[in-house]
Length: 539
Image (tube, rainbow, N blue to C red):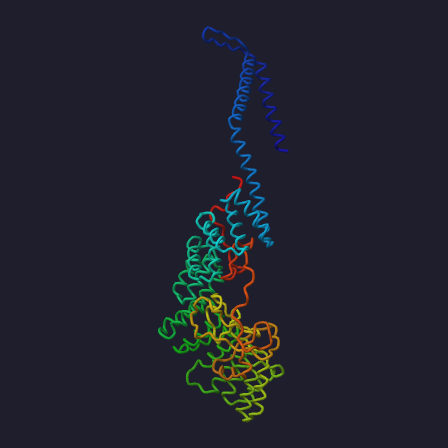
């Protein structure tokens, strides 16, 4: 509506101007080189307008003739770009669908039409991956890594290929370069940090985490730093107790409910005489995640306490999480040490109908200590062989007797979780990144014919380190590892790796896929595209 009003205003203004000039005709005289031209102002204006129109028409025609070759070339370029765009689109769809024949066809067409396009290079690499031609994929990714607009994608692809070939040194170098080039790339920062963690270089890993903190969310950054500081405190515990205590306290400030951090900080503070501070740290972590390590540290806060003193302290701790099995187990164990057998039996009574292994073994210990009844004790040991498994530290199918900062299977940081393991446990594969403390990681034997693990309705926890030798006694049959996914036992240990399936291809939604480090968490920022983005194919 506004445009219509403006148009009418302009037309009206021109009409008024023409009428005004018509009412005031005037005369125009031009004398030049002996020529004398007399005319009115309106005629002169009409002549100038006509001459201008003729000149514009002539210039337009001349320019069209002169530019016709370039226009023809542009038309050919546009048609070529459209063909390349369709070929790339169909090729990517074929790769996503797993149609290797169609992917090869469209890749060949794209390489013939527009071989230098970024998406053409990506299609070439994906087709090579789908075809199992890793050399061609490596060449395509190297070409992308050498260009400014596709460098991040090329480094990611080279990182993936190095991971698949288990060349961890080369993969680490690519991740480091990608992290230096684009600090916002979460996968690069995470992979570089994890490679440093697998070698135990915690100071360098922490420095790299600080430089690339933008790639992590605030909560994830605090958690990762707390895990690294805890690992550094554990490494320094034997040689430098003061630094170990400082690292542990900083980790507690970042992640106060992290069980290994709270247990280590509480133990180091108790050794220094800060009993109240240690009790607060352990109590806070216990309320969030009841765990036998926390119960053990809390019961041993004061050196030289009697068994009854430790029992009173554990009773106060168990009251903070009423109804939790870890509180009952800690209370029963402390009561057994204090010869309070009635309290020990009362604590375990709610769990005797369907006892776990630790409950059954504690009952066997109570029968021996109270009545010296070896028959009843053997009965409880037999029930322990077929009882439900207890939670333990597991990561990627690997079971450890204690918490480790890095998974020995995949090298992931903060991979260990306190949960009930699967019926069949894995030994670490033969070709893995170096671990921090390989001597501390052992494989636990699976139970004989274990029942289905209970649903995750509450927090799980593990047995006290003080009774670990007693709780791990099993029959020779139970000590044999079971095959993954099978309830029958074999004379040979389960294989470390299953037969490799088809090689994964970079998915279109997140290219390229990363089979090494885990995908970013939901709260983490996604990697930003390279500077400048993709250039348009029709330019």
